[in-house]
Each structure stands twice: as C-alpha cells, then as structure tokens.
Image (spheres, one colour):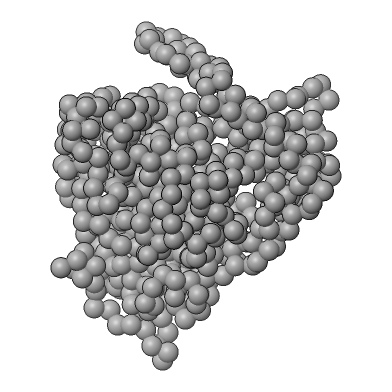
Length: 578
C-alpha cells in the first residue's frame, strides 16, 4: 500500500450542487496567512494574517540565552498560533460555512527545520532544553552552519558523490544536513535527544492530522534525497563518526507526493481552526514551489520568481541537466511528471528593508510622511526619475550571502562608486538593480546548461513595486508576467488541498481552473536594456572577483567581526580561517 493509499480520507468529492471551499495556509518568515478559496474557480473569499509572537530570534532566546552571529531561530508554537487565529479569521471574513470546507493545505519557508521527539514534540518545549539554542527551529536564513556545508561539499567532491551534481555541485548551509551536523558538533546532547529531524513544512501537517508524512519537495531539495536514497552512512560517517546514522535514524520517513492527502484533521486541530474534524489535510509543500501552479506555470520553461524577503526561482522541465549553483533538481519537485528545478537569492526585500530602515536621513522620512507614503515608496519615486546608470553605482546583492549560483553565505553586500554627491535614492536604485542582476545570472546559467527559460513570471509582495518590475524586465530582456493574486503561496496551497480532497485529478488541472496570471505586464525597453548590459558587465566582474576566489576580503571581514564580537563578550576567540 502506498503512502497516498494509506492516508486517503473518505471525504466526498464536491459536486456542482454542493458549495465547496478549501483553505491554504502560507507560513512565511514573520507571519502566517490563511486564505479561503472557492474550489470551482479559485475565487479568494477571505484571508487573515497572524504575526509570529516571537518573530525571528537572532540575538537571544525567549529566556535570555544569547545567540552567536549568523543564527536565526523561531519558536514552534508561533506556527500553531497561526492555525488558532488566522484560519478562523479567514473563515469569518469569507463568510462561508466551515462545514463546506473540504480540505486544508500548508506551505512553509525552507529549509526551516526543527528537532523533535518521535511524537513530534519540539525539543525546545521540553523543560531541560528551553535554554539550548539547538533545540529551537532553525529558520531558512540560519547561516551559522557554513563551515559544516563547506566540509560536506569538499568531501562530496573528493569522493565524486553521484548526488552532488543534482545540486549544482554545492550543498547549502541553509539545508538539513549542514544544520544537523552543526547541532551534533555544537551540542551533542541535543543531537542525541533528537529522534526526528523535521522540516517545519511537515511538522505543521503532523500537528494538523497526527501523521508524519515527509513531503517530496523538501526531502528532495533540502534533504539530499535523490532516486529514493539519501547520502550513504559511509559518507556521513566520514564527516563525523556520530553522524553516520543520521539519515536512517532521524531523517528517513515515508514520502508523500505533492497534492496527496496526509490524513484527516484531528479533533484537536479542528478545535484550533474551527473546521470539521476529518477533512483532508494535504501533504506539506514549500512556499515557492506551491506558487508555480497558482501562477499557471506547470509547463517546461516557465520560471516563477517568488519575490519577498528573499527570492526563490522555480521551474519545471522535461529534461534532466546539471545546472551549476542550482538549489536542486527533483523528480516531481513542483508538479508530478516533470523535473522541478530551484535556484534563489538569499536577500531581496530584506536588503531594501534594511536600507530604508538604517540608511535614510530624517529629512527623507519627513518628506515621505508629508507625501503620505512609505519610505520605500518615496525612495522609489525619486529613483524612478533617473536614467539607467545616472547614479554611477553598481552593487552586489549578497547582504544575506549568495544562494545561487555561488552557494556561499560567507559573502556580503557591496556598493561601488559612491561619492560625496551620492544620495539615498541612488543607493536604493542600485540595490534594486543588483537583485535584478542576480536573477539574470541565474537565468543565463540555466539557459547555458540546457534548461532554457522561455517565460518569466513574478509573484510575491514585491510585484507591487512597478519600478522594480520594470528594472527586472529591462535587465533580463524578458517580458514579465505577474501572478494574478497577491497571495500566491496561500492560493497554491489551497489548490493542493483541492487536489488532495479529490476535487481535481491533478495539480495541472487545478492550475487551469483555479490559478491566474496577467501576461506580459512589463515589457523590456530596448534602449534601457542596452544600457543595463554595461552595468551588468561590471556586476559580473565584481561577482566573479569576490565570489569565485579572486579576493576573499568578504570572508576575512566576517571572520574579523566574529572574533571581535566574541572578544567583546569576554569569550576567548577561537582560531578562525578565511
């Protein structure tokens, strides 16, 4: 019996006489959003957002324990709170009868992972571990395992591990194995107590239906699971003898296909959400990958860029190729029957937010208030008046490291060309352009590797910035289509709930009926594209100089910073190498 057969519920397939709705829940970096969607046509009827009470833990735990640099943790009960508040809120706004909801599905940031007991209890909720950082959720942007990732990559390359090319030749510090190895080596006691190493995407489904089903998406992209296997015990033991049994003892779990049911909603979860116990709970998914069907991007060559705090680039193809620096290629990783490719940028909206928060003088803030617009809107309005290259700047978009194609989170941001005449809007525009250049590197790498990108579709909150969108069209030379929903991940999850509940035979069918996209909203301007080619050439020079070993200054500076912070805290600094 397959996992799909074992977990299929007995809920009826909706008919035209019976109104049917589904709920999609999108767990982001700072909050979770629930969306109520009509099954017949994808109409979005009601939504609700709940912010995580603890947000992102970067400096200390809730009890006061200090955290080192490059850490990013979360509190798992914040995710349950989304179910308790956002789902009932969305149902209330939609004005639908909860009895007519036939399914619920979720998506999550990835790789966001946590240690639990065999029963799914997070170790951070056990009294003996509340002050231990490694007992908490490690958010996707936890980059403190770069040293472990480097060792994984070096050993895999030396041994010519067959799975390494499936990840563009590099495993990220954001993923499951590097983070788990860091836990073993930093806190062996917490590692020993970890009975299950669980993607948050699967943990929240476990909370909803009481069944732990590992989804094919995160298992393939973040868990180095290829062709039904994880890295061997021999390889893992060579990294650290205590790590040899990690995959078999803490990671391995039955795999659920995307769009399959994981189980039925438990009585406890029904109490949280206000939904009927027993309705279908779909297998978990990743926020980026679930968005592709919502944008009707289920055919080969259609790349979707989901732009928020970071950007994830996903695309399906009918060919298997090795793409340098990609985050992975997984059979059925986006839609069944096609190879799903992923790449990404670790910082996009985060970079713009950082600049607006830290680098704008008071007179700009006052001017924005007087114009009744945000600082972002004010900077965008000022920057939009410029010709391409007028600011005389070029930037590197590595403030959160580089996810693709360099896969190195020891890299950092850079702005070149500043003078005493440089203004905040100049730097702001250069940062917008830098993220577009980073996307162009990804597109060119895919095409050069035999996986051509024929269409670019953009989703996420940043689609509201028309200047940014036009810059992306001009820089990439591709028309930009825009998803016809401001809640792409939640809509995509709702569509997967409809498939899992039996309303549609496939994700592609649900995409045709429930997805939406506005085609060619932004068209490249030829003159601006030519002008951007010159700036992009400078970006590529800096990209390769700092990112491919020409100059390790960024890594040395990070090492100096860590040493200084340790010294200031009264801790004898450990030897560090760049």
